Amino acid sequence: MPQAAEPSAHAEPASGTASGTASGTVRKKRRRIVVPLVLMVAIGGAAVLGATRPWEHRNSVAEQPTLGHDTVVVEKGALSSGIQVGGSLGYDAPTPVVAAGRGTFTALPDVGSVVKAGGRFYEVDGRPVVLMTGNRPLWRDLGSGVGDGPDVEQLKRNLIKLGHADGLGLAVDEKFTPGTVIAVKRWQKALGVKQTGKVALGSVVMLPRSAVRVHKVAAQLGSPLGATPVLNVSSTDLVAMVQPADNQLSRFKPNGKVVVKLAEGGTVNGRIRSLIRGGDSDEGGGGSGGSGDGRQKTSVTIVLDDQRQARQAGPSSVTVGVVGDTATDALIVPVTALLALDGGGYGVKVVDGTTDRLVKVRLGLVADAKAQITGNVRSGDRVVIPK
Image 1 (cartoon, rainbow, N blue to C red):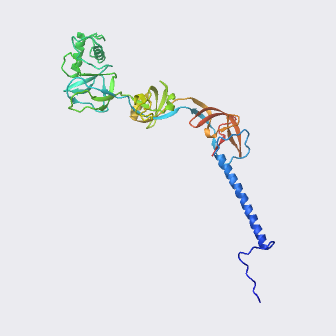
Image 2 (image 1 turned 90 degrees about the horizontal axis):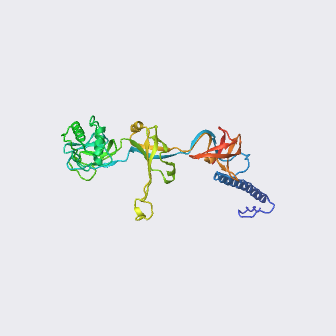
Image 3 (image 1 turned 90 degrees about the vertical axis):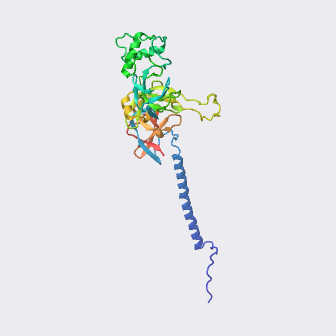
């Protein structure tokens, strides 16, 4: 009896057979699978589009839940447009001191030491050099018979202030009088040096401050006097110094108020004393090729109201806050919650249960990525932050 032939693996199914029916079923299943995939792609694309359009345009109320968003609470408080700039706390601009006359340094001060007017600054040939207050250095010996001059007036002013002219009726003028000789001898006696009544060139250093802090000592013991600075001195007061960016300079007004945050905590109020604008270090613009490599930053110096607190912190890094416009008792939201509306203006989407509604708002102060708003919004409402 002949055996039935096995069907070929490549045989085409006959039309209307069970195989054809199965094939049609497979195609239907494929179609059912493809359609949901297309929908998934479309929905995914819409979600991506929505996520990349946080400032979407709307002119009507949204009644359906927003896909893919965070929410934030509308806060009530104060908002300020002030800025903060990093800086440093240090002693005021160092000034070089050059020794006059001849001799050898036999004693020098320690860095950080404070010397007041009338005090010993350093020593030359075993004799003290004294600090006095004045705007110009001495350039000659001062004694009986010397011609009138502003250097004599400076000396007499110091002798009177230090108490060495008491009872002499010494006038503050440019004449070296017999009374001036007596006052000089009293001063020399207090120093423990020979009472000559004459002030030798190099025995006094005139500086415009009544007290200075030794910032740096450049001279060496045993070295001779020369034209180079002996040391650098600064004010005993600490100041805050910052170098703001060009787009921040308009915030730094003369005598403007600032708040200095100290590195170890606490704040000190201050006032803007000076602003020295930067410029090209290569005058005429040559050599740098306009690249800006030689450009110097603008420096701002701030005097502090409380030196006691500043000295406790010492030279350190600080943050300087410049006082700006302030809004108090304001409704505040992140600027990322604002939606640009068709026809102008802004709105926020307020979450209401499972839906959200678009509310048009008016903007007030904007600072630090936050905005003051007014409108049909209350403190405690939640608003949408699109992802």
